[in-house]
Image (cartoon, rainbow, N blue to C red; front, side, top):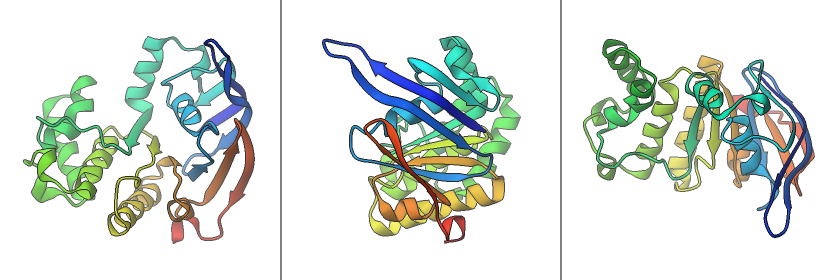
Length: 230
C-alpha cells in the first residue's frame, strides 16, 4: 500500500528547514498505524506526502503502486479522488451545507451519478450512526457528530487509504473513544488502511502499530499486542 523510501523534505526560505531527513517506511494494506512525535518531528509533513498534498525534495513515495513524487499536481489530484481520503481535527465541513450534502461533496466533484451518490450517502450515514441527522447543518451537531460526518465523507469515496490528522483532538474522552471505535470498525470491516497522526497515547493504542518520529527521522516502529482488537 505505502512504500516510503529515502524521503527527504526540505523547505527553503531564509534558512532551509529539513522536515524529513531520509525516512524509510513500509505500510501494508489493511494496517492501522499511529504516527507520534513531538511538534516539529515531521508528522504532518509525512501525512501530506502520503496523500499527495505535497512532494518530497528527494526519495520515493509509492502509494498503491504510484510514485507520487513523479506525478504532477493534476495527476496527484486525480489520484487523491479515488485512492485517498482524509479526516482532520477541525472537521472542515461546509457550514451552509446539510450533512448529506457535505458527505456527497467529493462524489459530486468526481462526477458520480446522482443515484449512486444517494445510495452511497445513505450507506455511510448508517455506518456512522447518523441516519437521523442527515438534514441538519454542522452548527446543529455536537463535536462528535461533526467528526462522524467527516468520517462518513471520507468513507463515501471507497478510497483504500484513510489519513487522519488528530481525529480525536477536539473531542472529550467519551466522544474521542466513540471515534476510535468507529475507525477500528472501518479498518476491520472494510480493510481500509488507516494512518493516524496523534499526540494522544490512548488513541495511538487503538492502532496495531506505532511509528515514532523525532527530528525528521523514524525513532521507533513497534507493533502493539492489542491493536485493532482493543
